[in-house]
Length: 203
Ligand SMILES: Cc1cc2nc3c(=O)[nH]c(=O)nc-3n(C[C@H](O)[C@H](O)[C@H](O)COP(=O)(O)O)c2cc1C
Image (tube, rainbow, N blue to C red):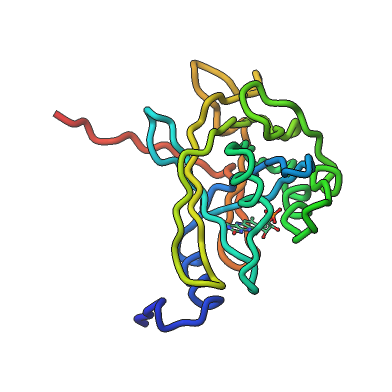
C-alpha cells in the first residue's frame, strides 16, 4: 500500500497521520479569554522543541467551517498558556473538555476541574494535573489553506510545577506520573508497560 496524503480528503489524511504517528503525548492546554473566561482543551499534536531555550509546541486545527478554536483565540489575546500533563485520573475530564463549547462557557467547570493561578502567566493551571508548564508565547506558525488551516503554537516554558510525589533524583518518575498517550481512532494508551534499553556507549 502506498498512500499520498495530498490526494486524500482532510479526514482520511488526518486518520493516516494519527494512525502512524503514535503514541502521542497530550498537552492539556489551559488559557484565559479576553472575556475573562477560563478554557482548557487537549491537543495531541504536541512536542518539545528545544531545551535551552525550553520551547514546546502544539498544533491547533480549525473547525470545519474555518473558525478558530478558543485556545488559539485566547493565546493570541494573552500571549501565554499552560500545558498540563494528562494522567489516567484526568482522562474523563480531558475528554469532556474536548467538546466544542461556546467561548463564554468555563470549560474548567464543565470538566469538573479546578483553576489555580500561575506564578508568571495569566492563564490558569489545572490543579488536578501533577505537572503544569507555564508558557509564554514565542511564535504562531500557519500551515494549509482556509478553511482547513493548522497553527503551530510555540511557547517558552518559564516554570514547571511538579507534584512532590513524582520527583526523585532531580527527575520526574514516569511510573508515578501515569501519563496517557493518544493513538489513532478513539484509542489511548497507558505508560504502565515500560522497559529500559541502555544506549550503546559513544566514544
Ligand atoms: C485526545 C485529544 C487530542 C486532540 N488533539 C488535537 C490537536 O492536536 N489539535 C487540534 O486542533 N484539536 C485536537 N483535539 C480536539 C480539541 O481538543 C477540540 O477541538 C476542542 O474543542 C478545542 O477546544 P477549544 O475551542 O476550547 O480550544 C483533540 C481532542 C482530543 C480528545
